[in-house]
Image 1 (cartoon, rainbow, N blue to C red):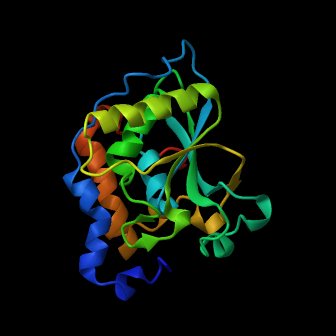
Image 2: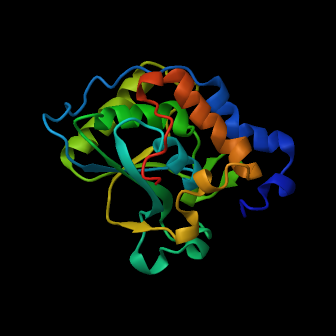
Length: 225
């Protein structure tokens, strides 16, 4: 779906589904298994997918300890990592974000708590709100065994605790590579806060982050001069 046309092409009731998860979200428990905070500042990376990368990027730019967020594609090959091709839903790619964070300020498990709590609806399979297709699937692309362990255990913990009314559909897969998206997709929410798609689908997620996880929320978006 062309998100630039969504506000006029999709009925208001359908669009409202995009923010329903954010507006009704409740706090989730901390991960029982996590990677401890590092003793010294540094930089580590997490790659997550959960629908339109505009909203995912916008949410994580407001998370404490995150230093930069980049929209892009993961799950497919280099020769199909363009927006036009990924939009077909046949490339294996998911719209994703690469999150650089300081492991002395925030843990990988806390990033996943944000991911499951407010960034998207992890029970949706191959869709988020008005967007449908495999490119909008929920996925955690781990880079090492520790990230995989935290992701698998947290999903099992949330499932066992009946955190959601439906089973979690999030895919946990090794990251083959991350390909940055085109320049006009980067920091899209920051640069277009009044765009109808952003207002309806994504700003409620940031409001939910501030409301539900105030200790993890920062006002100034990461990586923005």
